[in-house]
Image 1 (cartoon, one colour):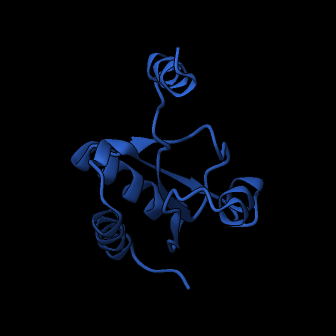
Image 2 (tube, one colour):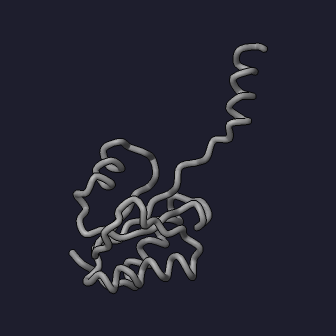
Image 3 (cartoon, one colour):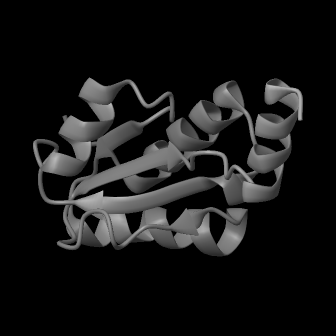
Length: 113
């Protein structure tokens, strides 16, 4: 059921607060449909990324949500995952970046070398 952009913003802020992390570790974007491969991959793979989405009344309202979260909250915009804009607005936490230096050190310690 579509909701207005102000409610979506509040829902997203509450969701990000529950799952934690600075706004800069979160991504936001829009999609035409929640059945695109992006959503299927996130929902079926249990990526632990706290994917959350809502449907806005219009694509313009969806873009207002993205604009607010990016420009006023510091959330990263994701236009690459779902290249066609739409009324579905999504937010998810970016996966942690593993440093290759830390991985090499961990492997050396684990192997006893």
